Image 1 (spheres, helix red, strand yellow):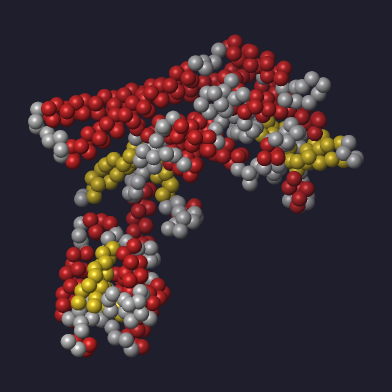
Image 2 (cartoon, helix red, strand yellow):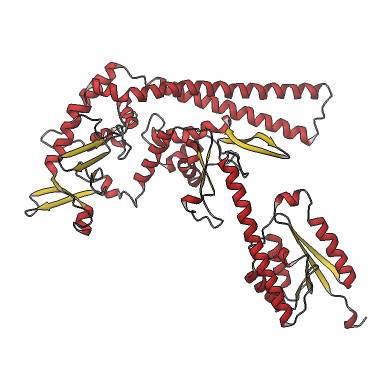
Length: 543
């Protein structure tokens, strides 16, 4: 056989855009049949077939595509021609299409299309490039239409697919023709883990104060509380849970692009879902995470020697107020840092003598907040919520125990069927079913026990009038030091933000933090330094 009669070796590249098409064999078998027939009619020797199910052609992040390119650019190449159904199967980006066509051509490998036969002269090259431009345009238009449909589906409250956040599961909501619309519902098997993570961040485990992300990860892994997939927790996973708005009932769809960049707010669709935690708890956790961010609050500010550093802000611009000195350091003031850095055009902020303001804040807390009647009034709503949470937790425990019992009963039926010879113990599907039921049973039991332990622990911290009286008296005694000065850690358990305006000082704090201090969940050395308002109205604290 002479060299001129040696058939060209061909590689067939098959691709569909979506996993749904690949699953239902809509396009790949037809492409394969046409490709093999094309090679046979041209006398090509088909040496390799590359199948790419459910991969977009707008980029080259395709395993089979990269394997084909690697083979086609190796020396010597194992094939002479790459056969595709159409150029859009190869690439839907005109620049990338030309890049890879030329890359293959440098190694003597040619790209041919079954439905778009082209020559090698300049006119045909230009036609191929024009068709590639149209393919790219059509791809982008299709993406726009698909995204518009997905956004409308989300606006109606339906789930668009993908793996739901831990703590949720996807259920059928309604039937519209051949399509089944789906929504998220709370998964009791894992929702309690999410609640635990938020409680650890905000309240600790009953023996320590509020936990950071790293400590929460250690807590979960040390107690063998696994992820949904049965793995160990990581910092990124916990942080995503603590910052995901889905858990307070607002799932954000279309928040990021394919490159993970945040999209404009106008592009984001908020889908209402059943909340796992309360909005107030979510907001409190966000404030804690922001306060611990070294870019927002440097560690030197957290542990500084002055009483209000890191807490005090200018009411006019919202900027922090920092220490300024006068007369060679004899006088110290809290002054607006915005005005100091950018001048009076940025803020007309004022300067306040440090000793005067420290005494004013401490005296106000002593005379107004640290009175038993005032404390009972402030904490009434928090205690009511705790009662509601306890009732919900009891319902949740009952649901978990019910699920564990149902799984146990189903296991018993399967075991009875095996003993009666009705079911085959060697059936792989039966083994998978038994393993799945065991996992559900064990996880439900573990979650119920953990929820019960948390409930028992919180129940032992019931608030009594005597506790309030003792706390108020002790806090008034400890907030000041003998010989002058203040107990900075005690003060920060009571107030987390001080705003200074002309003739007015507003003191704000967190009800939850106040309750933690009262119940002794935060020790003197573990008192946190930031929080939200325990009275959101400006006139809620008598002056």
